Amino acid sequence: MWRSLASNALTFLVVAVFVLAGVMLWAQNEYVDKGPLTQAICVEVPRGTTMFKVSKTLEAQGAVSNGSIFRLGADYTNKSQALKAGSYLVAPGASMSEITDVITRGGASTCGTEVVFRIGVTRASVQVREINPASGRYEEKASFNPAEGEAPEVYKAVLNRSDTRYRIALAEGVTSWQITNALKSIDILEGEAEQPAEGALAPDSYEFVPGDSRESVLTRMKEAQELILARAWENRADGLPYATPEEALIMASIVEKETGGDGERGLVASVFVNRLDKGMRLQTDPTVIYGITKGEGTLGRGLRQSELRKATPFNTYVIPALPPTPIANPGRASIEAALNPESTDFIFFVAKTLDPRDGHNFAVTLDEHNRNVAAYRALERANQ
Image (cartoon, rainbow, N blue to C red; front, top):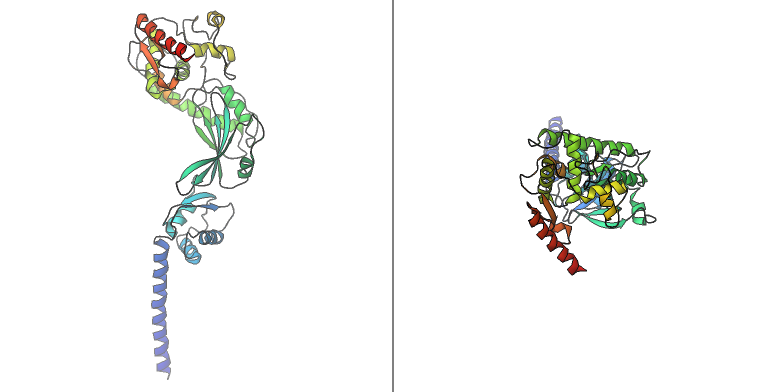
């Protein structure tokens, strides 16, 4: 009898071991096999949440077939305690293993809402964008000028969401006054902001979180510009008419304000370098305008003859050199163009059409330049 019981128990144990092994193998395959999602979704991981709650969310969204297996797999790979708050894009067919990696890897959110504070040359704006999981692209939900009234409800609603990302985007050619003034209007930043020197800030995109100080944001912009200028100065062409990196930065700011075309920056820089080499005046309107506005907004009208004749430190129709400071914050491309300009004999340039995006006609001689100017004036008259 005892032998029979022992034999039956052993048989049962063997069967149980095989069943358990089979279940484990099945669960392992379920964890790494293709998931049930047929289209991408966004999964939010709130701060302080647990893997249990996330697994329930994933089950409800149809991203995993079995929340228990998902949790067991996360435990087995030591990732249960490694959740990273944010909002993440989960691709169609993502396995439980891949989803676990996405929500525990960390880094910037790949899904959810983004608020972009754009600081442009002519205006500042706030854009609220939300990613479309199906396309993986951000779609605009609202856009407004913070200086022109109350923010829309869409903006107010996303401020309290854990998956909202915040970014400041600086356009090339904005002034330090424009940047500092715009930062003061961003109500989720804190502290005072002292206006940096002109040209000291790098136009780029900067992520931040609510509660960051305005000075910390400005510091990041300054450090970025210092690095760009230092590298460009180290790799500069020979024989340039600049004694210091600061003079190169002044030239870069002029190039930035004279052209918005990436393909023309080196040509425009060559014109001004050639003029300096020949002892000629730069004769560029943007420097005169900066002398009038001090970078505090746009002029909003044409220059008067009296302003072009008046002797000021920024009137390059009068002074035979660079102005004393940059006239804007130039981007990387303009800094590199100023320090590695095209090799040309051009001395003059004028716009090809009334649309600045169409670029310029360049000339070596005054006669050729006068013909280009005459063609441009004819376009002006035809437009009027």
